[in-house]
Length: 107
Length: 120
Image (tube, rainbow over all chains, first blue to last red; front, side):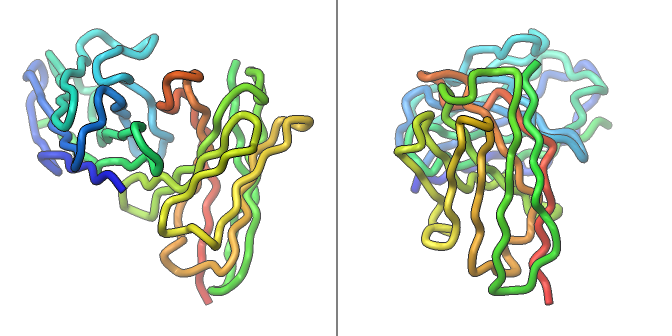
């Protein structure tokens, strides 16, 4: 199985900060990576697919990059509504494994 | 509007069985791969199982292989997860999720989940 490792596990940042979350795959997954946002008590919400494609309706402050084994999710200007946990998921091979999550806190 | 609604969760003893159901609407169910994802209390997301649009191909996480069976019924637009030999570590909120498209396996719609508690 492909292992997905996110860093950091917890991140504290201020409104309007630029925030970056990293996801590493244990083997190459080309660009078959998605990012999800999960707010407390809610189902996950798809933000980015194919590593860099923004899902419809997602604010443009979210962006994704990378290929192979290293990927990043960037929030260009953090907003209070971005308080959530963020997960990466690879869908190159079954099982479609998730990273352990990055909890984003607003200072 | 796409909607996914899970049901069938509850309290079950270790070694017991439970079947989860996911009722779908708002899209052509028979043309989309579907998945089950779970989340233990206070923990991260764990992909559990997937099933192709036709139902002919199924996939499982190692942690549930041989114990869980995924299936689908296109006539009533439902996804199922039969769970046998349940363990305490299967306690989680179980989500069903729809694949975005034939070429993109990311999940673009999710249900709100159904809670399974395995305890004596």
